[in-house]
Image (cartoon, rainbow, N blue to C red):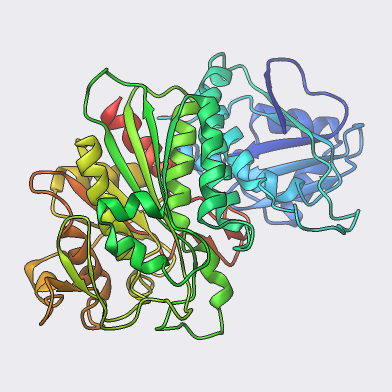
Length: 495
């Protein structure tokens, strides 16, 4: 997609996109186009009861008096309430409509598109990012695509008097690239994306200056990673641990460690899942995808921060060598774990990945992301990811980043009671407790592998990695949740 920022007049071809603030139908830009179309815009707005409220749209096809193919009016809400995320939503709404049309080009009329707290530069740049995020498609395995449904849009132009929008968009585009990379990883089928092939894709980040280290089963056995390796021992696909280092900050300064659960397919193992819906388990590596996408975004925009991403990549399969309920494994930390349920595997992967990251990098903070529990959906549905942390400052920073980016978090309880229920009769701990408080119990398990004094947060993104319906910035499918959140957190607190 070619995106340009320009001060030139609107062209006489392609689509025109016109953001309209609530009760802003009399503004100069709207009035000028209405005059050129002999009142067609106002008639269309009146017929559709369009007033500029958010999510409202009016599409005027082949407007009289113009050679342009259409004018698309999009509600931008109240001008005084315009935010960066609201501007993104305008771009997303435009993409949703235009990507399903036959348009080849579109021009945004952004004269006056700013708010009390958001200037024209920020508004235009974020609108463009919102467009990119919503325009995402994954068609690589479709050999036959209906010609009338195949998007034709190749370029958009943002006509704005803002002078800094283009420069601001440079970094936003890099972040959008990271989101799309994460979405691609999550969307790939498990016969294509498995630990080894996932690791190969990560190796491609070396071209951006990322140092990539990959450990196989042999190396992990020497390190004593019995928890992670136990999960993958029933699969013919070899488990991998991948480290992605971006050291763009002060030389020698301790990095931030991002840890991603990467279960490339989760059958549940011997504690096998029901067949219905099991196909969704290809996205059980959404945490690892988010970490990889974040590292890509940071490296692409040359972030001035030291960050390492660690991905625990496995398949959880039920063959004759698979881990059994009641097995006891020894983690890299030396702590022993009684495996009660082989479908509580993500926390086993994170246990060794987090410990290895601490031993290797001595990080200033650790944040892990995982599609970890179904229980978090019961609590938060698909509206928030669960945030678990014993470190108030870190939790507050992440909550703020969630508000800024729209990738929302809700802080969940993590107390001694949750730790008590995972005590084992024959080992140091067991990998599950009772159903009650399942997400907090899982977080308490992970907390046992965080060293004293290390700020840590666990993000349970099970309800956020995939959507079954179109969202303002996400078409149905993989969301890439976490990339924008982590990027903003790092930019604000570690650059």
